[in-house]
Length: 245
Image 1 (cartoon, helix red, strand yellow):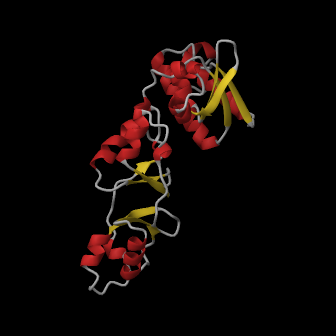
Image 2 (tube, rainbow, N blue to C red; image 1 turned 60 degrees about the vertical axis):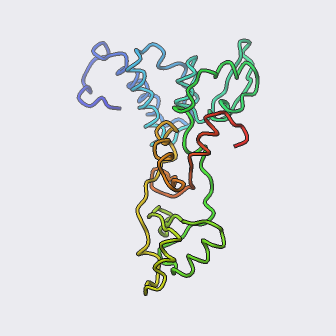
Image 3 (cartoon, rainbow, N blue to C red; image 1 turned 90 degrees about the horizontal axis):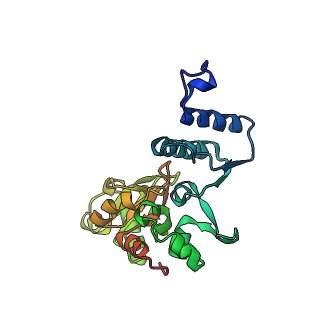
């Protein structure tokens, strides 16, 4: 919990944020299936609160716990929630959905007004604009086979993965065609390293890569597994609020 060195301290020797870490550890120690947290960080100052939110996300990724988190802070809900439920003034559940769908497709005028000031750049994640690749190749494919597959799918490049679907790089049709007379039996010599985006980063972080890339950018998970691709056009349409993307 980040409290190494404080094991023998008394409660009154701990700060508010440290006490919250102890409370979270105590709750997790009994290994519950579901963890209910009712405004746990509301009394903390902004810096400690932000640190605790990051700590909770780290723990959740590691322990894979279902957490029901109650808050009046929309920014906190947006930061922490995979799915967010919004109650109106009468306590009626008016929408439950992913953060992205709530921002782009609000169910009611109340929800629309409620989320209108949220900065989409810093909320919507790359996974929301990730699309399936038309074609993905492995290094053992022959150059002629790669050319045929690329032309058949009407694409000028393909990402290359290993047997475990981890991204290795990218190949370009023009380069394979230019060198196809060489005695290469596989496409391995043509594979180039390429930048990738992790699916959990926000569009604010991703846009510089999307704007400057000459091709779509591969999207991977935290283990480097290829999930699909993202491009500048999809990002801009989402940020403009195009619900048809």
